Figure 1 (tube, rainbow, N blue to C red):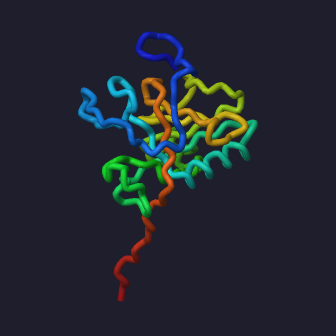
Figure 2 (figure 1 turned 30 degrees about the horizontal axis):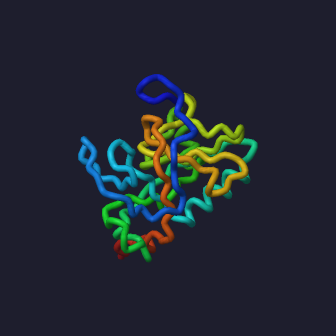
Figure 3 (figure 1 turned 45 degrees about the horizontal axis):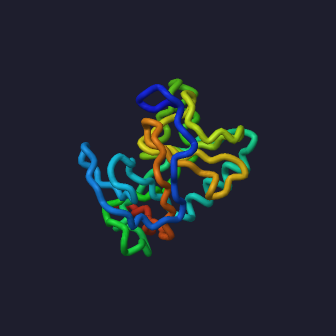
Length: 186
């Protein structure tokens, strides 16, 4: 994947895992607010719960030498259990994933993956240890690329344009979800 100038994405951009996002606030031209230690052009950081990141890294390690491609979705920080007080309640935090095999029968019949939602992010593993996005990678608003040995420090976040984003690991949990039963028929 290349940035807007056609050059490869650099591996020497900075990212922080485990930071709490206490940098200065700024508004980008599209109206999104992001936290940035440097201010200016830094893309908005990607927030993910520690438990989800741990699970994804475990899946990637188990799948190796095959790659992993998982759709992720977010919950507003204000809806999380035990969210850090300094995290804006409207900040999207990656909390859920969809099994890669969901919708396999639909895909087999129609030739397209209708069985899983588009999600707001993707988690990809690159068993070849290349941290860069490639043209073959599925893109989303945020893309997390993990490489062996699949530790927290082996994950790099990107936006859909291939720009590095700061990865912020949040020690919180999504709200408990329940399936409500429909009205009983008599």
